[in-house]
Length: 414
Image (cartoon, rainbow, N blue to C red; front, side, top):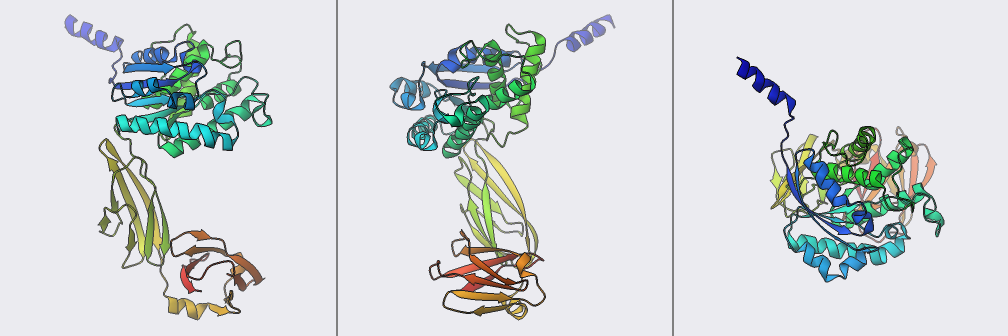
């Protein structure tokens, strides 16, 4: 009996972790190497029982374009099949005018992402969303405060990520949270730009949550920080990352695909537009027993009702599933014609009338035959009459959808 009691207290005294292991390459500049962010991250992970293999390529002041033109950067990328490659731009460049970012920053980021995918298709570029300077950047009104600059960095990194189908580690957003909620914690070094030890620790906590999809709370590594400060920074990272995983496009290293699609309904038919990320194969389930492996299929239902459409998008690394519900309540054209009076007034003008329907309170959406939304010119006549002017449109087949009181789409032909 004494031996059993001793064993019980031994197990109770030491926490048990399920160990995860990832490989990460950092490509950046001084925001990464000051206070050794990669090392801090590795120690936080170790303090949670997880293992990181880390390397870095950091040059002071380097932009995305500098890295994209440096053969040593590509040697690092190609040195092993990384799970993640962190990409950090020069601290100001993503906050500059859109035209400048689109002309230089974005193309360079795309070249780097392409090289990451070429080395290993399942690798993920992980963008290091940096922070605004303590008092912003005075050279331009749109970034001359911290919050202005921080928001432009936030917006730019998300735009860049959308173009390269990677993911984002939102350090800048956690930075703003700490500044607003805990202003006594100084995240900056003396220059008001580079991170203090607290700033680097916060960044490392955000990266831990972004990589492992787990909270850094209760890690055994706190560096030189007191426990209270470390706990605040851990909590800030958890709130910023784990509450908004989809917003940052974060997924595991074995689930790199993201299923995305949009749809347009025409009577009892549906037109699907596949917008999935990093996917090579697709499986659609239309909810009526029919399936398809086409990229963007169309489907016609035999009866009205409620259906759940499911898309499974996958590649050699894993898969992702997205479901959307639709309701079909189709009314035939003859029935609609008896309820609505649709009259051609001139070559390009039409009048829609219904004696018992408030057309003035309805919403109209016009589609061309490709499913693209077109804004029609609407001239209200009275509550029961609407006039349309299609003179700006080329001849062809269009679909007019009336939203309100369960009125369904119907067709017109110019």
